[in-house]
Every structure is written in structure tokens, then in C-alpha cells.
Image (cartoon, rainbow, N blue to C red; front, side, top):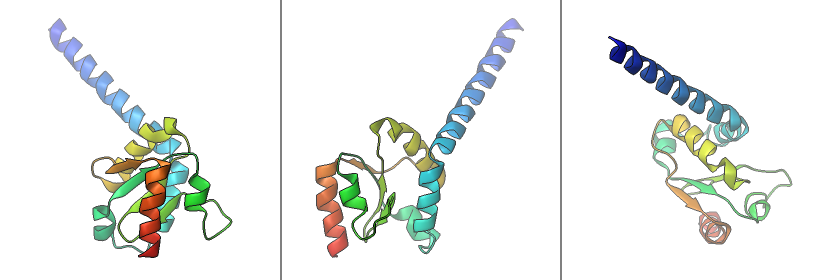
Length: 127
């Protein structure tokens, strides 16, 4: 009997911890989710969930994402992928969890640094 109580308490604690972690990650990245939703509203859901999702981090993010307008963009939709700007490396785990919830799939497919992102996004823009 005492062993059963301990197992139940551990299970409840584990579920509560996981739920808290997911809700905190979702709240932490609400701005990114809002921008992502606005940027992908015209893309059919089936295509959106199959497109690769790439998290981009580095020191030249404004040069990559704010090319055409003066406003700060958090999302770029290219021909081959959805590019998501992550300004702080410390936000990667939270944003990856939120993306997992948003897509109802595993976490993002790629994480690229600034140098690789410049090359890949340039190809996507010119295509």
C-alpha cells in the first residue's frame, strides 16, 4: 500500500512538472507563435506541417530577416522551409518545445548558425 502511494505521487508530480514546462515554454514564446501564425496563415495546413522548420541563431539576424522592410521579422517563409529567428541561444529549448506543440510533431528539423543561414536563405530568396 505505501509503495502504491509513492508511485502515484511520483506519477502526479511528473505529469505536473511536464505540464508546467510545456505551458511555460508556450507562454515564453507567445510572440514567436503569433508571428509564425500570421506568416503561415495562407499556407495550407498539410503543406505547413510538412515544410522543414529551421531555427536560426547568430549575430547577424537583422541582416537576414529584415531585408525588405524596416520592421523586425521573426519568420521568413522560403520556397523550401520555414525559417524562424531566435535572438538568444538560451531561448532555443523553449522555442523548440513551442514549435513541437504548434506543429504537433517532433521539434524543429534544423538549427543553423548565421553563416549557413545566410547561404541557405539567399538560395531560398533567389529561387
